[in-house]
Length: 145
Image (tube, rainbow, N blue to C red; front, side, top):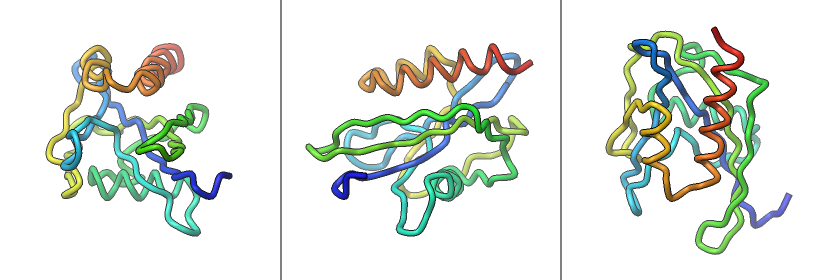
């Protein structure tokens, strides 16, 4: 691993609501107020999965027992932030109860549950993440009844 590389991890959380697949996106309270799934930097001694679980609870108030995780859907994105390399690992998870409330941390100012097209339009600046969302949708439709 590149010691200068920042590593982050999170979950692409979806729910099935009124026969629609919807993805959870959070709007940051900093920078350009971009939309992102719950994710954050890996702390020393933490695995990427532990980080994803911790960050999802901290940023969205969703605990491990609130969702089902799909071990067989994991995606890693590599890109630069302010000229420094960053790696982000995402797992896919489904909210068990579509009415489970989302509780934001002060790192975010808003959240939305969005169908694929709306989610893609919210993250249009991030082509690599759009690709991951499209792959998630395909995975859900072909693997889940």
